Amino acid sequence: MKKLVSYITTKLPENNFTIDLANSMFENGTDFIELGIPFSDPVADGPVIEQANQLSLKNKFTLEDLFYISANIKANRNLFWMGYFNSFYNYGVENICKKANSLDLKGFLIPDLPFEEGERYKKEFQESDLDLVTFVAPTDSKERVKKIVSNSSGFIYLVAYAGITGSGQSEDLTRVVADIKEFSNTPVYVGFGVDKNTAKEKAQGVDGVIVGSAFVKTLLDDSLTNIQKIDSISRLSREIKEKINS
Image (cartoon, rainbow, N blue to C red):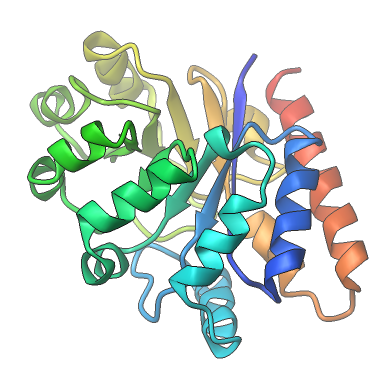
């Protein structure tokens, strides 16, 4: 069974909505959730998620909101925090690891933390029983792939193309997928540009997909009530899960 990893922006529009949304998504096909930590300069994300980040920050998001939401989501062991390294560094890597462990989280995604820099904090992650997701790009050489996936955990985030999330581009990933699987048994999930129209194709040859902008677009739709947003996103989650396994 191929897995669906779903990204949502934390505290958009408010904490209890995020809790209800996450719980509903887990009940409707989503296997893992990335709780996005709002940041003022999300360099790996496209305009949709960037707008969502800005709105959450306007709602006065703090890490205490993240902790409260995480504590009230049912399937915590399938929960990741996704954010930029500045947020982790300012709180203290050791401190945030301890907090995540106390909430029984799965791990972290930090897209602007280079592999070599992440190795400096490996002890903190391991001691707190947390996975730091490894990112692989289609431009990475075989030697580079071997280096960064050999000790991977959680899952490997295969970036579908060089660029930002949500732009819908496409590249042939056959070579890089083969390289990853030669050196690691960690599940490989494809992200960037995945939606209900592309999910089935992008899931070919890998263990699952990562979807973000397709969900966040609904979060930003002011024509919908909060209940309608949860219903719509949950239906989409269920539809994508069915598509990648059909």
